[in-house]
Length: 422
Ligand SMILES: NC(=O)c1ccc[n+]([C@@H]2O[C@H](COP(=O)([O-])OP(=O)(O)OC[C@H]3O[C@@H](n4cnc5c(N)ncnc54)[C@H](O)[C@@H]3O)[C@@H](O)[C@H]2O)c1
Image (cartoon, protein in one colour):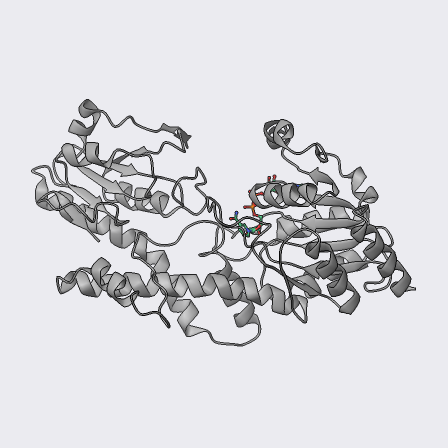
């Protein structure tokens, strides 16, 4: 029975007759949906945010249409779930958006459907949280419907790699689910990497992010050491990177932001705790990354206190600081988990009035991106480069002669009494 249903779906996929649904058309859902539609599948995007639908709908391929209503999910043979998996206010995993989206999928679940979870989660989530929700409908996984996990690995702003040429890792709840996931993605992307289980696919994504977090935290720690001993860390990293094997360069900065690198290690730690497993290195890296923005803010406060007649806790006149780049990553306007915002909070706690300039984020939380004109820069007591956007006139910042703290290495070729490197 399950075999016939599976073979029918394989045939539909091979003939590009399978209809695909994308639940959550944000950054990931849009990129994935475009790739699937460009591969020739009729693709329906289901997006809760109507403003997002209005923004996107005219820019998509003709066979990729957007809907707010989920009724058409019932017409889909394959459903990819790409909704956010953020943290709670208490800094704990929050799978409630994913669970709600899967429950909506469950309401339209039909025989023969393949559900693929793309959202980043802790190992075990697909089997222990998603499957029980889908099971409520009475259909049996592996026979009546299929369930796989395939982590999304897109790198926003990276023009060399897109959905098509980043290998897609796929694990299934059981063999039929895995096989279907592999056949489907094999008809969309250049390379598929099958793994034995959903848990292996989930842990692959977690490992990639934890690897980055640990290396970023390590280089920030070594940079502290190098600064204290007056050694140029950038020169050291470039020298180490000349070794043709065994070293992967990571660079110091204000800490890792965004929805993946700092978030997934917390999902992992939560899962480890529930399984009585201790991961001290991951814990330390998470802690170190959390402290990095505070460290940068303290560096800026120290520079300001040393340079200014008005102290940061002194005569009532607030020192003025400018953050250059407020998004979490260069050349993008995404501010989720941005460390610049954490530096902003710490500076405010230190009695500083904060301004920002970001060509990709013109308005944020009631603030507006400031123009980098002479008159404005004259009023600043401190400038901190927090995100290394391409189209920023760093020369204008240097020409202002204001204390300038570069947390990203964009001013490495400049020296001067007013320029501070981390
Ligand atoms: N952005 C990245 O670079 C990236 C990379 C790899 C993995 N991921 C992971 O992929 C997942 C999605 O991330 P994203 O950056 O695309 O998030 P996003 O916030 O940009 O998009 C998610 C979209 O889902 C919509 N949504 C939420 N609940 C819904 C529902 N019930 N029905 C329909 N739409 C719903 C939201 O309105 C939003 O537009 C997350 O788990 C994230 O960790 C993100």
